[in-house]
Length: 443
Ligand code: SAH
Ligand code: SF4
Ligand code: F3S
Image (cartoon, rainbow, N blue to C red):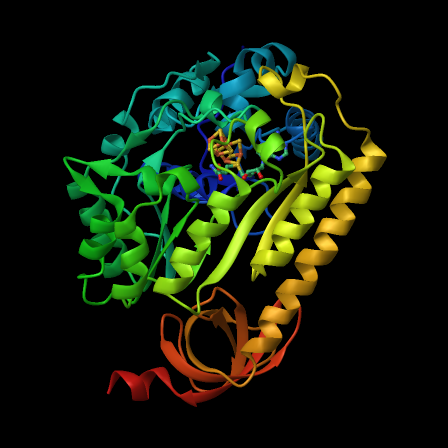
């Protein structure tokens, strides 16, 4: 391979879940520490990191077409291309073999080694690292500094649950929990640099534990950081819910009234085939307990339609579960066979047009409930964390406690927590009137 110029500018493109967003931010920090600059919007970068997701179909195809586009746009000066994330973990070798334009491949547990891998590529040698050393990555990363009012903090990674449709246990490895003291330090640094809300992240975030300390104790400790105003977490798993977590929703003011608890299906037979180890009914009873602790809790979930063997009647059970819950928000996907997972080779794979039709019906129900939830919020007074400027002059965008997008006009600044009245609802956002400004509130 020919000698390559050391990259001076970079761009990180993250796909997939919030954990990938977090990883993308950490990679950017790492590259900045190495002396590189983020390429300005619209400009070509010397190094492009494709931080990929493998959760649903065509993930690999998409990576190859992105690579092709980058090579073409670069003309006689193509950028150094790094493939990171879950596709890199699952198909790293194949990518190296099929795409000579790729300089390096780095898995989600190895990206702290990015700087030395870049040096290796500059030296004329392609590099690949998809090792999964438990926990080594975090210790090797520089301190946080690029943060907005709302920041992510990965506290737990990996998954031991092995749902039969899912690649995550293979791409992210076994469950690990980061040590409590590291998390406290990182949270404090985030707040020092302007974060007012922290969203705790994990593939099974509520499985976090460390030296007898459980997830709800972590929330209670973080809530003691004075300038931290809001705590959220995602994604939680029904089987790791504890009484302590439910109580935290009643007792910790800074813990926002929002719960993302995926259920996937309303049919017990399908749930068993998915290896979910909860039933539709046990899920609903769990939600009842959360709602008893925090009556205004906004609920969110994930659904898969067209899992192998799913009958019309079983799909109807999912619709009934949605009706029973009344989600404030939910995500629904067509089942996608993932290479190497048990479900991919099950009999009775469902035809595409059947999945399309089921997805449409499910999404119609979810959209109806989401609009109803937003409409029921009109007239409420609540606090909004101001996250950025809106398109119109004087307009601000932020989030309600229930994670609704809210826009309003008036005197405010990023990071303020302001009091508003919600006055108008749409399917995806609400308009509000400013009641107190951030400055007045701080006085
Ligand atoms: N750990 C989380 C979710 C991780 S993946 C949990 O278990 O709840 C995010 C969502 O993607 C899943 O909740 C599921 O709804 C969806 N998903 C995962 N694998 C999929 C597949 N093979 N096909 C379609 N959707 C899938
Ligand atoms: Fe995937 Fe299931 Fe693990 Fe969630 S719990 S990451 S869906 S295997
Ligand atoms: Fe995708 Fe990996 Fe997240 S497969 S959803 S980026 S854990």
